[in-house]
Amino acid sequence: MTFVGSLSLFLAMIALAALPSSSVALVVVRSATRGVRHGIATSLGIAVGDLIFVAFAVAGLVAMTEAMGVSFAMMRYAAAAYLFWFGISLMRKETAAMNGAGADGRRGGLWISFAAGILLTLGDVKAILFYAALFPLFVDLTAMTFTNVALIAAITLIAVAGVKIAYAMTAATIARASHEWPYRRAARRVAGGAMIAAAGALALKS
Image (cartoon, rainbow, N blue to C red):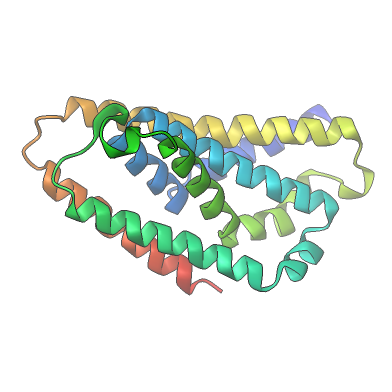
């Protein structure tokens, strides 16, 4: 890959990662309600999901998704179910467990956030469209070397995880600053509603 090609791919991934989406919403809400560590764990999970799609793209994304068949649909529905459950839990809970305190402070809580990020990405139709249609514009998939694959993986990890972690840290900072905000319950209900809406949108995608 040339320097220009690598830079173009990096900027494109940053732009796509920064666009408002269900993954951004999940990172922000996990960070604001469970603490920045959970937001970072979710961000890393999303980046790992993108790395899986990079591997699919190198190996032949279309063939891979066709081979996955029903499994892909199941992952999408599982991600939608998780978003729905998370939205309901936000709307029902009275107080936020800030900075990792509370129920999600138990061992395994961070792994749940990490797995949620992976699951949401693997069920995202937009991600498949990007790696199937736009990714080949930046990368010559017919001339891949180990060095190129390693470079693409590094670009993906830095761009996607970097943007999502920035969202996570910003959300956690705002949440801490508004700890005594009188409208926190209403804000949690709005966030929960947004998660439920995202779940519905994800489930209905074709």
